[in-house]
Image (cartoon, rainbow, N blue to C red; front, side, top):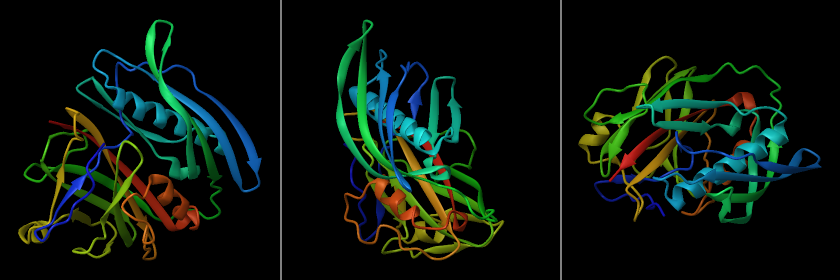
Length: 290
């Protein structure tokens, strides 16, 4: 399990590993789902699976199967294919960053069953979930968007390719928006736990001027001791992490009532209460190796 974020006097925030990447040689079997319409909310039972390859850990397969089930659930509830961003690293790694925010939000999620099984001679991790989803019907044309979202090592230039970091590397994030927006930055673990990176007790919510680069943390923050570092979970030699950026027209206090065990579903539930045209999102995926 990934480490929780930690802020110290000379703060260094430890990022979490996430569910949203897959390895090229993973083979996915078909997923099944069932749907119940409960008015504005739809309850979907979906099953995802991932076949274990030679270099696949059970933890990675579990994360992939859960992510696959979530994708199927949102697609069925919203009636569309969820948009995604795919980045290939060295022809081996495919980061399938599923952004369910555009067509449907998972506001509640329960894992009904999960575990390893043998299918046609292959070991597969199968995860079955019951998800409550709010399909999003955009009423107004969005006049805001995130133009750019990138991550790099603190001493390296930014790049649009999917980076690979070493355990304890210091990183920074760059965001550019269309329109003056308030930036919220989150890190998501492979089991769905979410950590709020910005704002935090040391850095308040930042409104970014449209068309200008916002770098977090910037040089002044880093000079004062505020740094972001990536870490692999205990007992794993590599992990796939994701940064979620939510930009809003008005200042919002996300996850203020949640404790350290807040989940991605908690954030989605709060987003579902907002007018869809009032916020934009971006996700950044990368790999961390020990």
